[in-house]
Image (cartoon, rainbow, N blue to C red; front, side, top):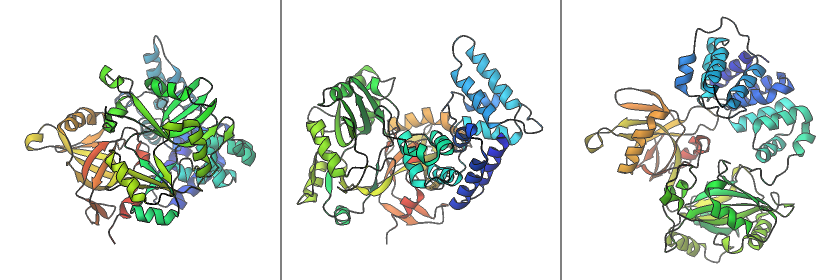
Length: 503
């Protein structure tokens, strides 16, 4: 397959907001792709090479660009192979070899192909091939059931691997994907509820648990081997040795647990979220490393040979209590007074409660209505699009943030407001130091960023507005915290923002 076929399809995706049109364009391309190039084509169109990030920045690529090739000659297989060589090159002389490989690749690319490759390698490729659209396209191209493709993606964690399996082995290959201890699955997600009463009424006799202000973890144990993953499936085992030791002590041999972890004060109250997240970094200072993390597990996906993904929550919860005991998150099944549990959670310094359907399976990677989160304040996770230089006491600091909601069809984030409220002196200094690393462009007043950072925003609500392209604007927005545990693809959608319109 020629690279220009992928580039042309990418342009077609960027030119439409129609989900059906995107799916049709993708399925045509994937249907024509040879089996050995399908995974690379899928990876390229979802904006992430099969090798992941290869450590090449915008500035390096800009310096290497030369006059484009007069005609297209690159194939998808050649590009994928070259990127693999670049990613695997290390040791003495590696810098010059990587530079030469990149130079030769860009020299063979046309203008449109150069632009595509630069955006692909810098994480700037956002033309609308989001996971949901790509799953539908893979299903259409391979004539496989979409639900089966979706499940295989959630269990494999890889769209490209799933596409290759569907093309080479069809339904049988997709059905062979299973939960594997040691390979993380995408976490099940919750949707916001309008109120506690609404959530309880919607789910009947639900399970109500504390909603903690911690970091999501997924823990896999196979004998003495323990692996701990974040919500983005990044392994952090070396940074959280106390969690691994605790899981080794549980009364089982093989287990997969889902939960939260957080650092506590001496009186048992949660420390700020940033202190918990600080433990996950490789450059944590000695004071941060000394903070012990406490796990609170709320789901069990596997125990001693029994996969529980499809079992109802009530069964998974019973297995969880047998395995995790005192480390299960506080909660009750069909409490007589859910409001009392909410008050207790808030009094202990937590965010609110989760209200869960006891009959629901574990829908890996999905945000449905089986889990509902209840918090006393309205918050949204939004992408940071830009920051304006401050005035007065904030002169010299990047301050006022431009905020965007995720386009559910994969386009650029949609701006919904600005705010400088809630920014501490520490955050102002951090923004000013780090935002230039994400700079797309700038003018005299504003630094425009690649939309990779997620920030949690508290607000009083939203209102209709012609000022922003989404038709809505945030009311009295203020910064709560940055969310380094979330990727931009996990930000709230414009649909979620519009759903907050009063009336």
